Every structure is written in C-alpha cells, then in structure tokens.
Length: 398
Image 1 (cartoon, rainbow, N blue to C red):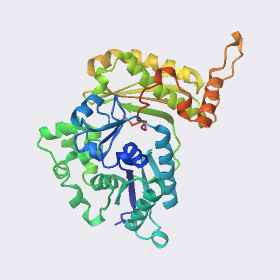
Image 2: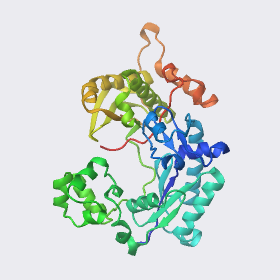
Image 3: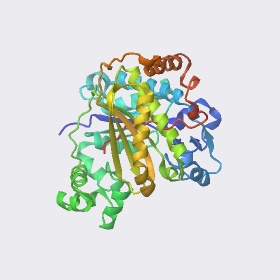
Image 4: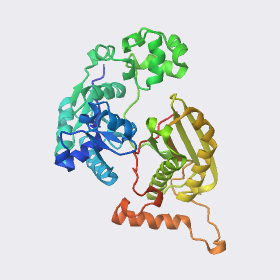
C-alpha cells in the first residue's frame, strides 16, 4: 500500500491571523475582518459562532465585544507569497488551492528531508519563523483524506492518518466531512438516518444516487471508502481567470447598488490579473449560488478577446440584469465571475482609432502601473472607496 505522502497545508483563520500578527493588541481577542460581511474571524470569535461569509450585523450580535478591522489585501498577499515560498522550498510538487492552502507531495524526500511527519513539522516551523503565522498540516495517502486530517487538526496542529487506519479515522466523522456535502445534501442524508461517513459507506452507489443524484452519489460512494486517485498537480494551464465572493445571508438584504459594488470589485480584480499575465478572453461567465444551495451559470461571449475592465464589466452587468428575476425569487449567497476562452498570448483584434476615443486597455494598463508602484489602495474606482474589498476565492466548479 502506498505511504501517506500527501500534505494539506492550511493557514489558520488567515486574514485574522495576519491582523493579530501585525497588531499585538489583537492577540487572544475576538477579531472580525470586514464589516458588511465577515471575511475572516479569529478562533476567539469563532468560539461565539462567528463564521466566514456571515453578515456583519449577525456576527456582532453573536460576539458584541469583537474587534472589527477593515481588510488589508496587500498585507494578505504579501503573507501568502512568503508562505508559498516555504511550500516550494519544501517540495517542487505544490498544488495551490487558494491564497492560504495547498497540497504538497513529499514522496521521494525521505533521505533528504525525513518522514512526512518530520517534513510537516519543519514546514510549520518555517511558516511560523518566516511569516509569523500558524498553519495546520494534514498528512494522508490521498488528497481528500489529507484535507480532512487538516480540518480535524485545526487550529495550529499536525495530524497523520496512517494507511492502515484510514477508515477507522474517517468513518466516525459526520457526513459534512465529505467533500461536497453542504447543509442541503446533509439534510437529505439525515432524512434517511445517515449521519456518519460509516453510514454512507454501508450504502450502494445506486442507493446514494437515488437520494442525492447520480454525480453526488458516485462521489460519496468513493470518498466514504477513501477512493481518491487524484495526484498533486503543478503548473496547471488555466482555462479561465475568475474570482468570487460569498455574501452569506447578508446577500438577501443587499440593494442592487451594493451588489453592483461587488460586481465591479470582482471584475476589476479579474481583468487586472489578466493584464498582469498577458492574457485576453472572450467569454464572461457569471456563477450564482442561492439560499436553497442551488447554483446557476450564465455566460456572454464578446465580439473579440479583451482584457479591458470596461468591456468585461459591461458584459458582467448585463448578465446580472438578466439573472435579476431568479435572484429575487431564490436569494443570493454567492456571486462569481470568470473570463474564459483565454488567449495566453494576449492577442487582441486591432481597431482603427476612429473618433479619437482613448484606448480603454491603455487606460487600464496605466492604472495597473500606478498600483504596482504605489499600492492597490492608491488608485481605485470611486464606487469602491471605503468599502470592503472582499474575500477573493478561486472559482468553484458547478
């Protein structure tokens, strides 16, 4: 049987930990990052039930003595770069999942770096020394189980799941421990008396499919038996550039103007990253998640590939307008955008300058240069002034 050689490294309450690191007065106290929506909460705040993506009013009701601080995206980006430098110093096989977590494959490093547990312990020490942040590491034979192990070891822990103890570790856990099982799926399983992973493992794939659908049934059948053949993948060729923001229940009380601020912020981030990497794209994709945990996707293909903020924003607003009826009916808890049909060479169709209008991409590029030199906060859109810049997350598959 293969050894437990996959590490899942996950920073603890990342944004809040950075704030506590940089301000000693916040250490040991409940900290909430973000006002309108909770972007991150320290473990002291989580003890009162505060969670990421929760509305700010609800969070303050649960923990009235919490200290609320505005997000500092530049500080989080810098901390993330330092941590990923540690990851890459540990092994060349690093698969980023987001700004604060990654899978690492440490197979073949025994003679150089020691056992996976020794490697995980050294990684945690190096992150603490170089970034000043706590990080939890789960170690297992599969990616799925390594991630479960890190969740069980939080905060600031390390946990190995030996290959001969995998099911003994996994089966007593609640069904929410299985990847993809959210509140709605858990509710369906609970209705059939299924509460633990062991309960899931006793069922056939067809029985699970009848309860939660074919695709999810297959996934639960495999994961409940720790069947996960995915490898740690590096250098993945991106087919799209995207970002999303969780709104939580606060999304239901947000005005159209407030939602538009979120749209502007996401599109601004996406197109800035496209220009930085020399990419253009033609298709703008909108992804929504609703109160009932359902999802919807809409897309619009532009006449030509672009990295212009204005062009992508116009398409994004058109998609949001088209989705307004379903948002009104079902409530909105997450909004995300991506630009696909990517041209990695940044090719665009040239146009004659009829009318003497300014080139929008040239304007965007000038804005990018100002931000690179003086910081992202130095120049921003007026609609974003004084507002949470939001939690940027990788786009999730439907």
